[in-house]
Image 1 (cartoon, one colour):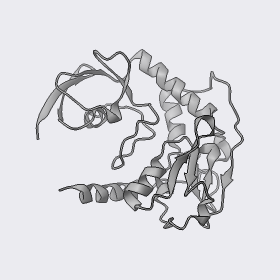
Image 2 (image 1 turned 180 degrees about the vertical axis):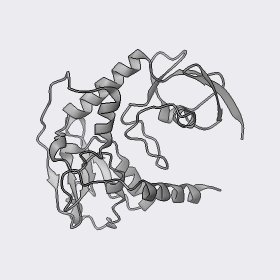
Image 3 (image 1 turned 180 degrees about the horizontal axis):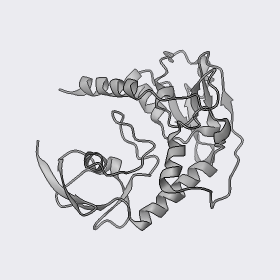
Image 4 (image 1 turned 90 degrees about the horizontal axis):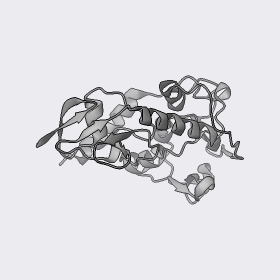
Length: 237
């Protein structure tokens, strides 16, 4: 496979052509926050947390969908990028209703971890306190729209790994939310196979198993890795 050389944070990096900046950055073990990205799922650049500065480009680019090329010079952690990530994190917290103290994912939440990573100890932005619903119609699982950050991991894992396509994104603007079927109660969507993959990949407490209490939701990284590896093997020629 052809390779190219680029510079990431002044470090020379060799990367295969056809791969992304995020893959090169992760291979070089350079920390870069993400929320919507999950290895094995198609990249969508929804969270914008992986923005990097590329020399010659007028604005930061999302590393998860930007391809490597010969001679690129990339900055991953400039003062400008740090401020942008802090603001993005504040926006994620203030646009929803993230009450960590009573959340099933408290202590096991990627959004919580991100806040620590970017140094957010309070929000400089006003909280919106939107009126959002909770869907408990499924016999095993629940969906709390108050905690959803629209990363679309659930949409992609259901379509690309399970092949059921239960989830989608509905409406626009501030009304935008994850929907099951044609905006139906989750429990009434016959396409759902009850596999729980959407719950496993959710980075917050938006999707959860019924009966879980505060701090009880935990990811199973080994299971997720196995699911994604199986999908990648199927796609190999």
